[in-house]
Length: 441
Image 1 (tube, rainbow, N blue to C red):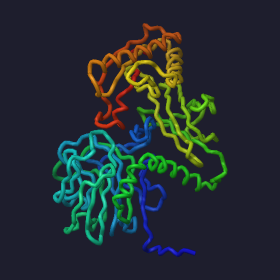
Image 2 (image 1 turned 90 degrees about the vertical axis):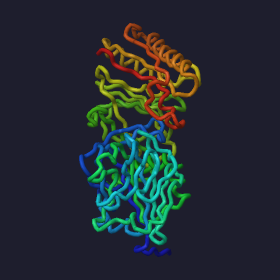
Image 3 (image 1 turned 120 degrees about the horizontal axis):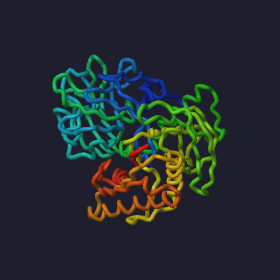
Image 4 (image 1 turned 180 degrees about the vertical axis):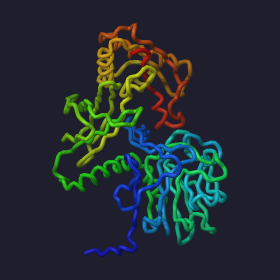
């Protein structure tokens, strides 16, 4: 038998912002809002591929606060803080963590794209870019007073905190993303996907592993919340078939869409496993596999997505958004694939394009613009030609299926309109896309 000393057992809390500010396991207090209340929206995270996830969006000079008193002093000795977040702006100083409840400027910032602990240390240029999610870890060892700060698994800052600037003051609050009272430009609007708090120090190997396993960790955090909910209802059974819980929302209002048609098509054999009108609350048994999800709702653009649940157990939550069909609205056509460097449509694109054909036929007066986009690699002129040829191929598919060519305008922008950073492949691939804009409805 193993006896655990509860007084010294390691503790940690996870906040994954699944429509609330609660800690996942209910062990620690909910975060509180600083400034204006933010909102929960679905965003595409590069590490999740084409999948989307709920995040908490906050305004400039606003943020969140953790009450260490109510958490029985989780962060009073050695501790670690792990955050996955993005900022809208990175010019000058942008606050990440405040340890003194706005009583001094000292604390953790991003400074012109570098990690910074004011006034002690500043890093070399870090992998932090505007509107791009960053994996950030700060640790403080109470024994030797060493503070370390990591970005995307790499150690950038290490110093001895002789003045205890990383120790919470008498208010015993840790604040995130919130500006101070004097300089009104030391914060940025942005979004956060999760915050994890530990009462122990993550070592360099753990910090690197947490970054490398980011996709798995994010998915597990979301799934764990669903599992906890099921456990409270006392219906958990490890032998039950795998299930998917749908959470589909309106991209404009963030309200749930209650009548959604969802089709699960096996990638392996193209067989339609499940197709039915479903509300967001329904959970349906389904075999562990890789699927193309085809999602429709009246008044919304259809959506094609991929879902890999080959290694999942129990209940899997699927969050997504649908864009309402309105003049001027633009969406990315998901799961449209071309031969590398060419404009030949691959057959894996056909299910998504068939849904677009159905949409055009159901809305017989709708006129659209198809726009092609590339990343910034290679010759810009050739990229523009490639983007033009690719949207023409999409148009040809629609016309061959009975859609009038008079209802379709094609434009190739090449690399002129990126929606993500071109600095690395993880985000660069998001720029290689075909978009669909409503001109008339």
